[in-house]
Every structure is written in structure tokens, then in C-alpha cells.
Image (cartoon, rainbow, N blue to C red; front, top):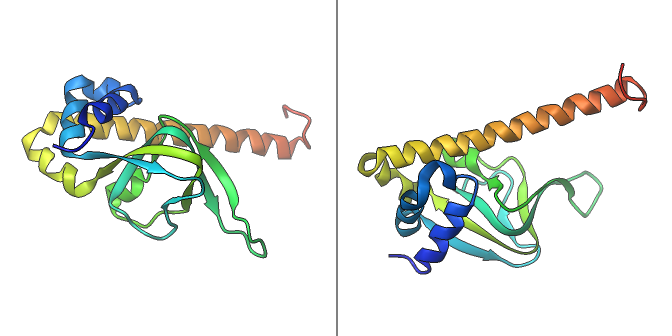
Length: 166
């Protein structure tokens, strides 16, 4: 049993994925497949190009997804993640390297799920893993929908010269 199991289970259950897996599922994940990570200000959680085989749920603070910009020392912040947001889920699923670097903006906390810890649960508790992955995919879908909406708004802004509707 991992340290702080009750605290980790509560953090998982209170995150958006909690409604898909329930309290029992959150407890199983806390015992078998999750750990809490505290991040200091400006600490790197995921580095661009590196696969960690883990994904994370932000439970406190904010994380910046950033990209290096030519001729600038400070990376450009592309997006800020807050409580309930997922990080690294695509790398977790397909093993690819992270598209960008993710670092903490101030002190933050995440729950980490490692693929090696989740894999045994596929046979032992397939319904839990199915519901868990369904929640992850729903969050990814929600993120993609938001990105598409923002892209359309930007396109409209550009096409109208900032005047609004076409």
C-alpha cells in the first residue's frame, strides 16, 4: 500500500475522472497505480520529446505547457493547466514523446499514473480500467473541442480584421 492512500483516493475521486470510476475505483487506483507528486515553482514535469509512460492529473496549482521560441531565452507559454486538467495522457497511451515541456507555475501538485502500474489492472479489474480510460478519452475530447473552438474564433478574428462576424 502506498503512502497517503486515503488522500490520493480523495484527490482522484474529486477530479473529473472520479465520476466515471467511483469511490471504490479511486481507492483501487490510489492503492495500486497512483502517487502524489509535489512540484516546486518552475519544476519540469514533462520534457519535450521525452516519453514518461505516465500521465498526470493536476490537483493543486497551475502548470504551463511551453514551447521554445527562436531567439528568446524564455519559452512561450502555450496553455496553462489548472486543477482537474490532464497532462501527458497521449504519451501514456501511445508511448510517444511529449509534444512540449510542462513546468509548474508556483508550487503545484499532481497525481501520477504509471503505465506499468495500470497494466496489471487490465486483467484484474477490466471494468475499472475501461471506465478510467473512458474518462481520459473524454477529457482529451473536451480539450480538442476547446482548441477547435479557439481556432475558429481566431480564424474569424483574422478574416474580419477583428470586427467580429463575417
